[in-house]
Image (cartoon, rainbow, N blue to C red; front, side):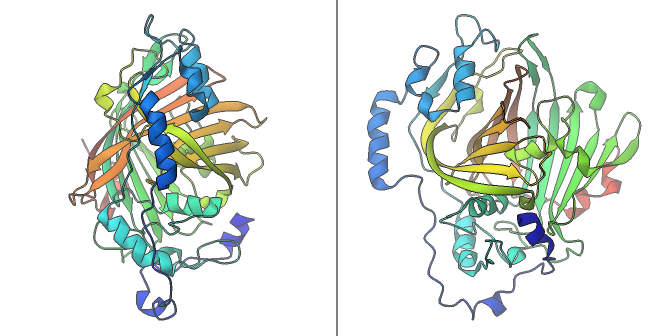
Length: 425
């Protein structure tokens, strides 16, 4: 079991040991990175297909002709506009645009070429020098676990600050419950853009990542704040604290609450970024590749929806090859019996996800939208700008506009403290 194997390894090193490792691995082959989602021959086929489809509006009249590139749940929603409260006479629709390669930043390319040859694994594929690396550890992944490691090592700018405008949507009652939050992330390891790199040296508690959330809406949650710290050691559970502003009280959240719905939404804590937990909690099976229509260069100003509308209109999808990963939690009583990830091989973000309930029935469909954002270092980073979740069993939804404020900015570890949680606003 992956979890059992990881429990036998306490991660102690918090800075890079390049001087010690380089002599042992001097003969490692040079890394080719990045690689596009398509080979030149495959891209010829895609471009030929785009001659017919690029620029076309897809709605109920022609959705079946591109259904092979979409999750079944999305196609179902497109065909049932009234059930999911699409605008009368307009229905649900999106547009197909040409494929454009997503490129990593110069810092990510440099880190990957430097550290990928140094990655060491045991017989189960577990990275044994996990804290000593940065960038994409497996530029040419061959297993589901290697793809999962690439996802986990993507620090998305090392630090980030963005706004969430995220209504909880009920298509049956045609209503939204408005939510607005500001979110900060700080990565302590795997850093590629913000000094100190590749790790913050004074990390005595062994943190992997800090997350801080400030809530503005709904009104009853105004100035409620939350932070959680993830440890490098996979045997340690996250430490999470919530300051509930109305009662001016802090409480520590139990790890058992990670499968609870977040404030009445369809999303659980583990659903953040499609998966927000230790890799050791799951098994990962790489089931080949699949071409999907992905929302990778989305101007969110083009996206429109009316109150209570489940799936917004105006998304722009481009055809792209993805890794298909079947993810099963090690806990047999876990909320989801399995997840299926569709991972973009160019930005290492889960762009689509299917989730099944404990009885194996189809339950939820998730989608990410991304766009190229300018970092504080002046580079271009493909980053989240939108998120949707559809609960197919309850006919319920969630929609989120994400507005990046700063990628690669100056965020201090002091933000992730109890004293800052109680700060007066």
